[in-house]
Length: 82
Image (cartoon, rainbow, N blue to C red; front, side):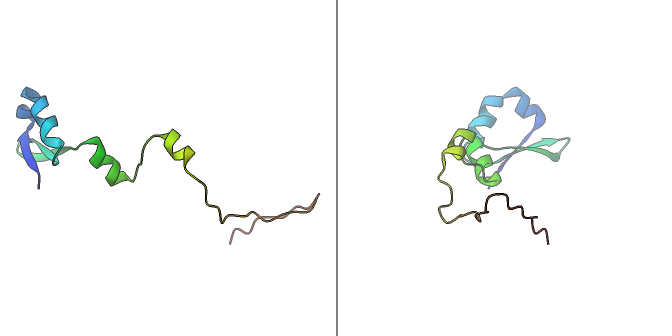
């Protein structure tokens, strides 16, 4: 479900558009054709897969199953890029 408003209506009442975007996408038309979509930041983050801030992401636990291969002193291996 979505709400559709003209760009003129949007410019005249931005607050109403923002309130509507909290519950559903707001399609903003320009000369009768869809031109933009206004969505809440929570909806945007769900769509893009973003979760929190960079600080939150850095604080996440790393994969405990990851164990890099051990090299002997002075040993050099070329990476397998195949």
